Length: 497
Image (cartoon, rainbow, N blue to C red; front, side, top):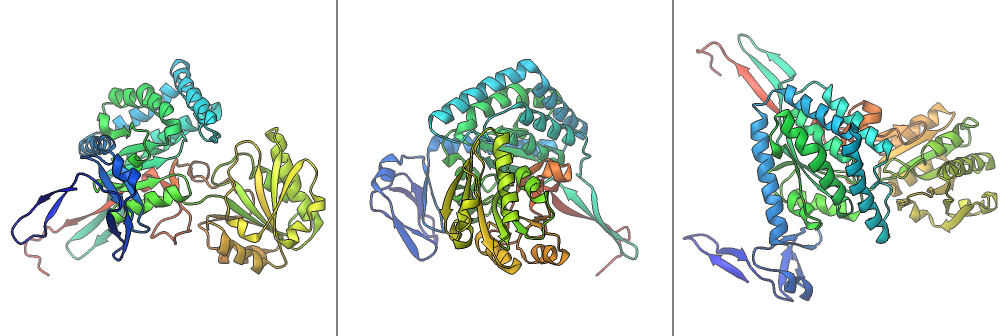
């Protein structure tokens, strides 16, 4: 099972070379789990076993995947060292060249063909492809993001604070952080976002979902690598884990040389990645479960509700409205909500699905037009994030008071986005103050995006599902990825404490 090594006075250790079915693996300090036959058969010398300390999940990383990740992080680490001596004008050139290649029709046509193959393969497996497809809108969004970074000044060496003392001083300045690792779902546009860390003197290693790996390879080959070379930046400044196996993400997040791990997406897979990073001592930024909530009061202005609902259901992403809580039982407000849902569905030339959760909402089923697919359910289902490609899907809950709506949000939502639609300032204030969310608004929910809201391409969004974030907001941008140095000037050689 292991190759043992001993030294005087030390506890014997060894290298794991095999697993046996039924072998006991401890986790969490006082629990254990047994190795099953499938894992025991698959494990080979050189492979690695990651043991999730939270629940005992055993993650098998093959030697090939481990080597691929290790080599990529090594190249990125070397590139980070080189970036310290590179003029920022070269980083500016990289963003310009990358954007130009995406504008080039001949280059983009080849990327689009790779993307079409990925989309076709994903569809054949019954996968959702809405976020995977590179359309003209996504292309322009990537170009816009790169142009934003091109015109953004470097924050390396920027002063955060100057502290004057009698005869000496301390400057608090920003410094590059290191290797930033990304694991993200099949969204090719994240390439443009992730390269934002170069502006801060950092390097990046990315692992993309297997559905989009062909597209990612094409972007690297046709746009990223040639742009790095032509700009005079180290080739390892942007690395792609060229492995389809999901364990590549776990191996990447367990590498202690990574300075920050960023996981895009939601659900158990992202939570697992976060657990791997934390137990490996790697700082991590997680998205968590998505889906926005809208609290709509009976005193909301006429027409506003319909427009805000429609604008919040134009496509399925993390900031799409997922649950609408109606305060009061006025049919007018429900009809406005349904009108917004239907408008969004018609805009996509698709039917809509509405989940009526709880007795109060289910009692209004007769008000739902026949073109809407109605699915009765229970309040507890408001914790479910609906995943859809073409047909908008949303839950509707009805309560008597604003306090009930706030309690529902804090009990069942992912504590991400809440929008308060009301004509009462007191109600709006109560929703904003008491809903435990990093993003609060008073209209459509799709404003939650770094590039759209802050004019800075985002690296990732975070909710408060696992608690509030220390000293930062829920939008992680490239210029927020930095360390801090303290520069002291003590000209008087006789200075003493």
